[in-house]
Length: 291
Ligand code: AMP
Image 1 (tube, rainbow, N blue to C red):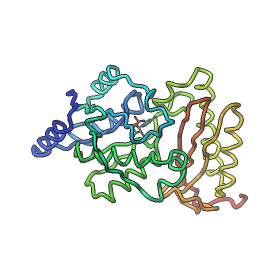
Image 2 (spheres, helix red, strand yellow; image 1 turned 30 degrees about the vertical axis):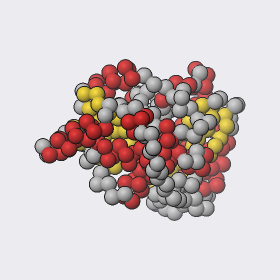
Image 3 (tube, protein in one colour; image 1 turned 180 degrees about the horizontal axis):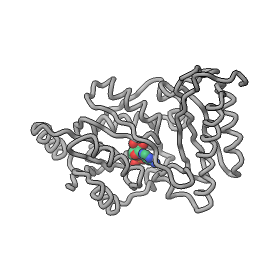
Image 4 (cartoon, rainbow, N blue to C red; image 1 turned 135 degrees about the vertical axis):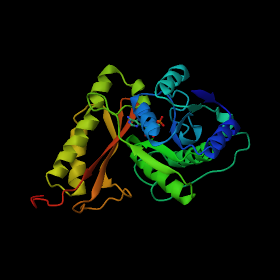
């Protein structure tokens, strides 16, 4: 595995590989790598001849009151893990390499960024879209792999990539969880042992709502009530949102229709740590009519 810190070097390597007819799969991350990330590395390996991962804690996607400065960083462990998972090139630029003095460009996506994460973290997705667009230009991959864990982010990236005419296939890979159902996240490092246990309520709430949907519930408000009730059983948990929405555009109809793909999205604070998760469920073709 080769570590690259300069964008010119990264794009030069990519250009050369493409000229040789090699395909490239890219996995952008913010580091503090765990099995969620490495599952994306493995996926990238399945997709293409060459794998590139990036580690960059992107200041543009953090609000001033958020955890940019204390975001976990462990470059040595990360390099070992990336190497173990057969990453060929690990791109680790510093902030000035990406945003030199005088950098002036912003990206803004409409509609999809207005709700859920976008509503609670204004500007967050604009920062995500900006860094991903820049990384796409620098790495110039054929494929880019993202986790379903950040569901709304995958919609934002697909939209940005379409709108800006990137010829890159976006691959979405499933969420990796611990044995209690808690989605792996770099931010889990902030949780105490008790909080880790409490955090599994997120998975339980999603599963309960999913079971209700599979049993015939199609009313969005009733699905949301199930989520809220269950989440509130944990003292000290604060809900930013816990909702069912249409998976294609995050719209919130009163009633979902048969065969519709629904996403259940949750963001909560457990103590001082903010966690997000989601799951997908298809409304059954034939509901019993009892709901
Ligand atoms: P991050 O380092 O948090 O920006 O995440 C980098 C990529 O890893 C994103 O595409 C995330 O969606 C993905 N990811 C994070 N956690 C998980 C997980 N538990 N399972 C699968 N993918 C994940």
